[in-house]
Length: 178
Image 1 (cartoon, one colour):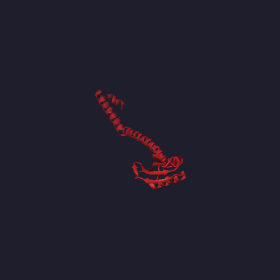
Image 2 (tube, one colour):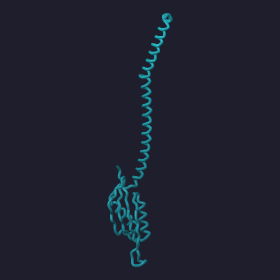
Image 3 (cartoon, helix red, strand yellow):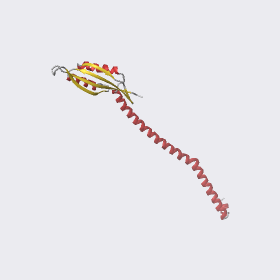
Image 4 (cartoon, one colour):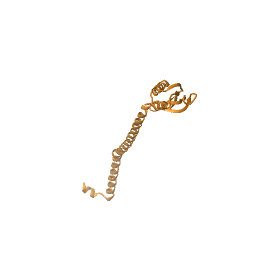
C-alpha cells in the first residue's frame, strides 16, 4: 500500500492529503460537538448550580440567625393582647407595692405591624417609695410592659396630710406572628 501511495502523482497526493485533513477536521468537529461541548456545558451548569446552592446556604444561615433573634424577643412580648390581663397585672403590682389604684382607663389597642400596643391610663395613690416600687415592678415584668408617661401630684390640705398621687400610662406590647 505504501508503494501504491508513492506511485501516485503529486496532485493525487495533495487531494488525498486534503481529504484526510478534511476528514480529520470533520472528526474533530463531531467530537467537539458531541463529546466535549456537552461536557463543558454540563460543567458550567454544575458550577452555576453550586453557586446558587452556596447562596441558598448563606441565606438559610442568615434566616436561621434572624429567627433565633426574633424568638428571643418574642419571649418578652406578651401573647395576650387584651387589656384585662394587663389590668390584672397592674392591680397585682399595686397590691404588692401597698398602693391604692384610684382609676384604670383602658384605651383602644394600636396595631403596629408585628406587634400590638395595649395602652391603659392608671391613677394611683400611696407613699412615694411605694409608688416607685410599683413602677419598678411594672417595668421589670417578664413581659414587655412600658411606662410611657408619668405625672405626679399631692392630695391633702397641708404637707403633713399630703399623699402622693401618680398618673401613669402603661403600654403592653404583644407580638403578632404572621
